[in-house]
Length: 148
Image 1 (cartoon, helix red, strand yellow):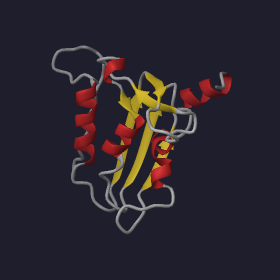
Image 2 (spheres, helix red, strand yellow; image 1 turned 90 degrees about the vertical axis):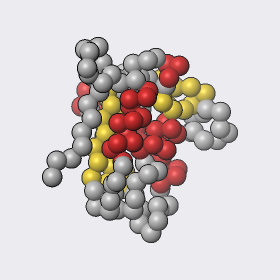
Image 3 (spheres, one colour; image 1 turned 120 degrees about the vertical axis):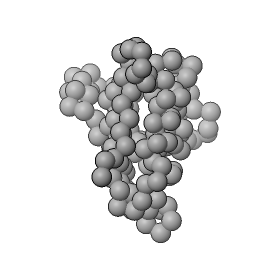
Image 4 (cartoon, helix red, strand yellow; image 1 turned 60 degrees about the vertical axis):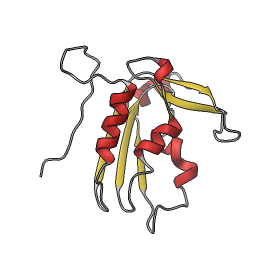
């Protein structure tokens, strides 16, 4: 069985889907569509990110939302809570997600950082959704050289 794969690259070549906010969120929607118990998902983002003051009181330890910045710019950023809503919330019990965000402002596990408070100790349906976050070796090496 061939699994659906979406690759968005900012090469600006006609016919290639560019990593705009709309296309990233659509690719995520395609990824999580029809996921079943026991399915394994992989999400990778390598690119720019930023932080913004969180409008929600006490929702972030540092008071800042982490955001990925798509090709169409910071005004179209995808806030961590929106990423959680698109990538994690739709997953059924027993689904497994590995997310790799190779970017500057996700110094901890990317999806876990965005979702730890809503996933740790809670469950979706009757079984917990397992979430793994990974940083690339380059990100780990840079983090060790220039700690925040």
